[in-house]
Length: 291
Image 1 (tube, rainbow, N blue to C red):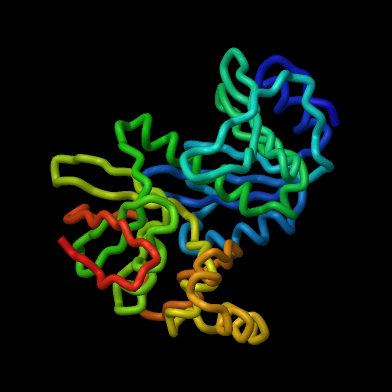
Image 2: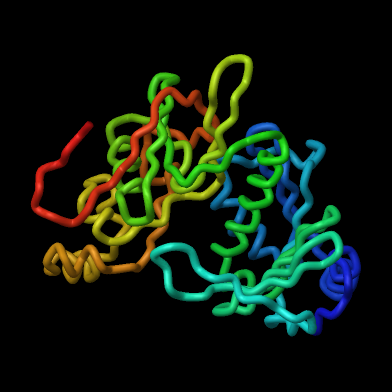
C-alpha cells in the first residue's frame, strides 16, 4: 500500500475503503472516551484484555475515534524527516512528515505508520506484531486531549494511597517504575508508569495517568517478590547469576499487568497531587541520600 495523499482525511479514506474496521471497543480515561476499531478481531481482543480496567460501554459518546489497520508496512511517498533521539538515547526510532492539518509518523524499525490530524487518528501496518506501539499511540491521543484542556505533561510515575497522591520524577533509569511498584506492593494504587498530566482545578492539583501498564527490566522483577512470576524460571536463573553492573545494563522489557499481579491494588488514573519526589539514583555502593 502506498500513502501519497495530501491530508489525513484523504489517507484515512483510502485505507478505510481497503481495510474497513468492524471490530470495536471503547475505553474511558478521566473525561475522555476513546473508540478503537480495527480490521482484525485479534487486535481489539488483545486491547480489550490489556485495557480492561478502562473499558466502557459502546453507547457512550466518544471524544476520539482511532482506527487500527493490520496490513504490510505501507510505503510513504512523503519526504520524511528523522526524529532525533532525546538526551541519553542513541537510536533513531521514527521519521515524520508534516501536512497542512496533520502529521505522518513512521516507526523505522517496525514499519508501522501513524496518521493524525483533522479528527483522524489512524494506525496502519504490522500493528498486531507491534501492539505496544499502538497502545502508545492511543495514550498519546489522550495526552493531546488533556493538554488542550490546559494540562502539563510530566515525565513521572505516580501512586496514590488513601486519597494522597505522590509523583515520582527523574531521568530514564533512575528508578521511577521500580519505586512505584514497590509502593504498590505495600498497598498503594497505581496511577502511571512514565507519563503524568498535571491539572490545577478549584479543588487543588491533580495528576492523571495514562492507560499503560509498566514495562520494566529484569532487575526490577528480581527485586520485588510480587513480580517474581513474570520472568520464566530459566531467565530468573540466568539474570540471578549476573553481577549488579551487568544486570543494570540489561534492557529487556516485561509487562507488569497491574490487575493481574496486585490483588489489593487498583489502576487508578486520577488522584490528588500532594507531593513530588525527584529521583537521582546512580549505581554505586553509597547509601541512599534523602533530602
